[in-house]
Length: 264
Picture 1 (cartoon, helix red, strand yellow):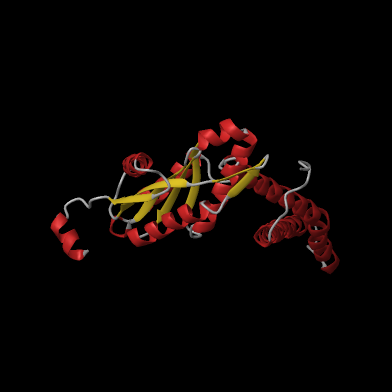
Picture 2 (tube, rainbow, N blue to C red):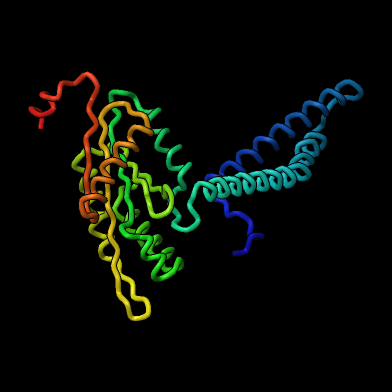
């Protein structure tokens, strides 16, 4: 990758550059006109037509290109910073959000959504028997498998959802606004599509599978509590045969369980 390549600017960047250049140039022209008018009115008969033209033209000709250059450089620096910030939030192997960025963005939703509108789900996806893949075929095959699993997860979620690598072979999927039906559908799609991954190494063929645990919420909840609930369901799947999905619905504080049964 060529690290010397200048960041490419988008239309919004160029619009900002144009506005900055025009604004600063107009300010320079105005200051130039006012200064020339005050000086010449004090010491001579004031500005004539030639003087007005020169006073306007000089800031544009001399200052315009300089201002444009500075504006372009500042826009490129901002774009480079955005790229670095985005890269720092991503797991280098799978291109998913890294652990810290995933939790931070999930917390933005949990803490920034009005209480009456908050709902969603957290899925914890763990690759089954993954240690045996690394031990038998090597870590390079394990890395390729993780990339394939990440791709299947990202292909199963909606545009608004978050996918993060929590560590090792474990992934988190945060589904803002999702109902239990949506969460179950996405979890099952992930499980089913991961099963389509097949590898052949030195004549040996093997496929992959994942276990998925999840927690659905309809009231304010702490991320730590949400993760613990999803993780409990994941371990239940792990202990009962793997390659399955199990979700729980977190209770709504102050709501009678009998009302939930009637509503269901």
